[in-house]
Image (cartoon, rainbow over all chains, first blue to last red; front, top):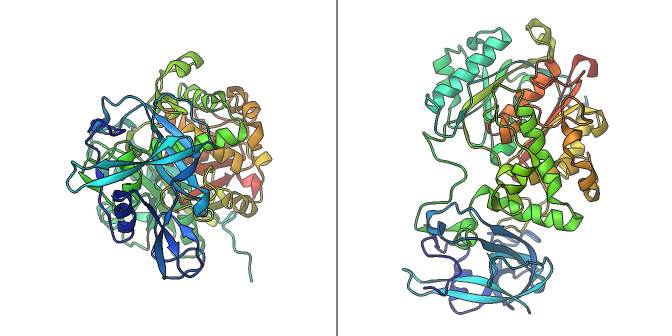
Length: 145
Length: 393
């Protein structure tokens, strides 16, 4: 799939007891994050209890696909054989103000040598790996609101 | 209640290490390296290994204390301790744990050690080789974020952004380490000096880390013998007294997927004040500093969080001249450290800290009475410790 940001061959996500609703949500182009039913606070990564109020009653809620670049890195030296011919690529840490400022990791789509500005807006892009077994979707980020 | 402190209660009687090798080139298996380093530390202390009754290590060291005690013929094992988590961040904490055992009477003679044979076992700086991944790493590895350099670079990028830190500040840390390694025959980079041009032209690993901002990967082992302060003068070398030690992390440092609230941090904001409080010294009192370089950016943030420099003054503070043993105000990583001596998961830095108090470093600082080591920035837990000469007690 040449539409994917990175070359194929990296380990693919395998949902576990904590994050299955997140990965299932991405398949439907929804960002589902953990939210406490008791105190209504979001938290990420997912955990068994809410770190705000310690409630065990936590669920998942959809959040809008808009974020802000909190930090980033441009990687030049690949440490996995699948990326040997990749060239530079950008990993971004995206903050979601609408979800209690939780952060997500993804790639910044577009020119890998583009200037990246901390604080600038980004929009979610869903990268479907429909040829994978089992199928999965990654959450990527496009510059701009 | 009596004051709860480790200050002045425990001393280092001896230090030792194997030869240091490039990754994968050690002629011995890891367990034998551990034994050789412990034997060397005992020889330096003038004791038989059979006097050891406790072992402390970190980062899930594979050399099991019970097997070590059996191999060394120790008549009695009284303390078998592992600092949980944090990789190299556990180095100074292992010293603290060993000291706590001695100070409270759990053991009398504890060896702190670390052994690595990355040829026999796996490498640190490589990505996972399996087809699927779950848990925290499922949220990073499929995006190409998997090595230590990649896990920490975003913290440094954010810190440099927030405080206008320039690349030259990171470069100064690397240049100082390589400078010191040229006087240290133990150093893997002995005979391989580094200049500004070579640094500037070296390839990026991940921005803002050039090749020379990244630690080595090595094989070898290091060890140090701790005993109670009352016995400190029974050994051949000038004692180094532990003045303070801390290990841990700030609020939710372990929040997964890069969600630590105070993100652009070396993990020391809550620990450093406790270290100085226990040690009874302040940054201005520190004569020589060893600060763990996994990556230079971590050194910079560690030194800021330990109060050596204001965050907005890094460009003026981080210059090579300040860090040189022979002439600088704050000699830094005087063995060459993890960048240029050897990556022994930072235990080599602690040995160097002791050597400075003893006066037998290959880059000896004049009258070093207060000698500090910072272990493993940006991970959790991290740790740091301060040794002092008898004059500081």
